[in-house]
Length: 258
Image (cartoon, rainbow, N blue to C red; front, side):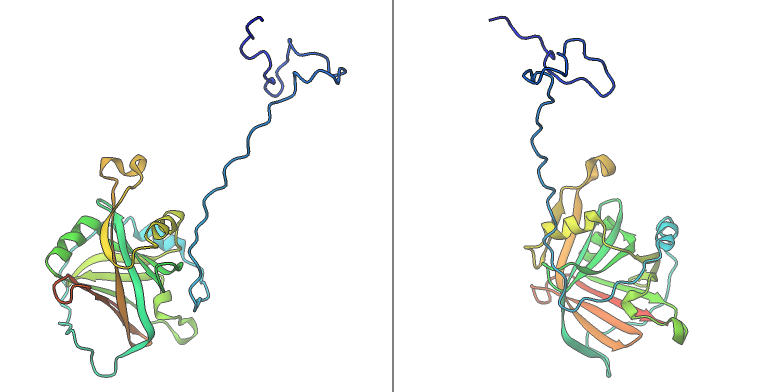
C-alpha cells in the first residue's frame, strides 16, 4: 500500500483552490468532505448562588473606578477617635448579621473586599481598597487593623443605602491611604470566590495570573466571619470574628457617612 501524502485529504482554506479534489458532481467520493471536529468542552460555570436577601443592583459609576484607582497611595496623618471593642450605646447587631468577608489581592496590587451572605453565595459587595496587599499583611501582623471608610451625605432625593455608595475615602489605622471604590464582581472575582467556596475561615495563597503579575503572581487571601453592627442609616461596622479568640489579628471595618 502506498504511503498517503500529508494533507492530501484535508479540506482547503476558504477561497483557496483545491487541485487534488474530485469534482463536486461525484456524490460517491467523499474525499473532499471536511473532517468532523469534536465539540468544544463546555465552559465551567460558577456554582455560587444568589443570597437569600438579594438586593436590587444599582448602576456602578465606572468612571470613578478608572479615575480613582490610578491615584497614588498617600499617607497624611488623620486623627481618628479611639474605637473601643464594646458597642456604643444605640448600636445594634442586626438579625442574620454574621456574614462572610474575604480580603484578597496580588502582593503588589491593591486589596479587594468581598462580602457574601455565605461562602456559597454570590458577593453582595465588592470594594477595591486603597491599600496594597503586602502593606495590609504587615499591619495585620501587628495584631490590630482599623479600616475606616467615609463618604459625604447626600441630599434626601439622592440618598441610597450606605453600602451602595460608590466612592469612599479610606483610612487605615488613622492614616489616609486614598479612595475605596465599589465595583461589580469581575470574572476573576467570581473565580476566586468559587475556589474558596469550601473555606469558611482561613488565610493562604492562590495561584494567580503569571502573564499579568509576573513571578510574584500569587494571590493572597484572608477569609473570616464578620459581625455586622448597624449604628444608624449612616454608619455600619464589620467586626472580624477570630477562631482563636483573642490570639488572632483584630480587624474592624467602619462605614461612615458624614
